[in-house]
Image (tube, rainbow, N blue to C red; front, side, top):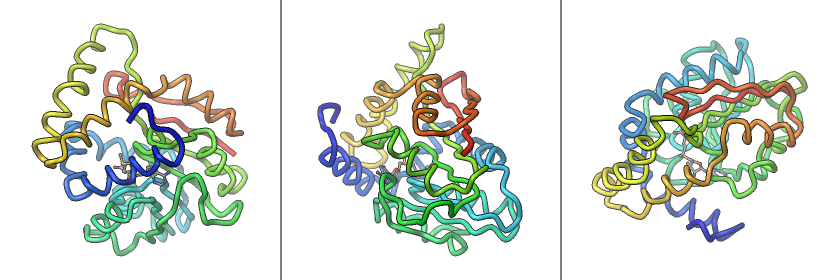
Length: 233
Ligand SMILES: C[S@@+](CC[C@H](N)C(=O)[O-])C[C@H]1O[C@@H](n2cnc3c(N)ncnc32)[C@H](O)[C@@H]1O
């Protein structure tokens, strides 16, 4: 996978998520040791949404981010977009999903006018994008002035004592567990590869700033293996 670029890589990613869609939520909870629920809660708080606000979650997958947002903020207009129909389809069957507006769309070409949303969120999506800076430019374009981009992502672990354990977990345990649960072993070799390729929190901050976002800050979670970045338009 690491050698793939552009459209070929995007097709590979979409095909992989289509194959694991049915097992995605279970694997996600297991791999994060159940912490993903609290991280999404933190993302929605960081988005500082007012009642009646308009929010978009890109690469929404099975939609947990917008389901969480709707449970926190009254009268929210919440759209979840993703380019893998199978992930959306699983999400649409979940409790709370009826209030999410679902949209099949590529994160690099969002089908919304400029300045539509008060906040744009994403969870574990950016790592998969072929062009991350272009994706943040697109998020900035659809944001209203003063709006927030909030990004939850796995980070490259810092060089500390825990790094070898983190790498062992992602490089060895996750592919085995993922392969057993989903019956798609190669899909779960993609995750450690994509994590190893991924940016440090400072590098991701720079990408967001290059895309035109201002006052980008981040918070590290889970011993530095996950980060929430916030940037303003
Ligand atoms: C790891 S899942 C994350 C799902 C969800 N956001 C969550 O927090 O659990 C990554 C999602 O990104 C989507 N994705 C990857 N590249 C995309 C792109 N260019 N446009 C839209 N969705 C994309 C995949 O289809 C998949 O559903």
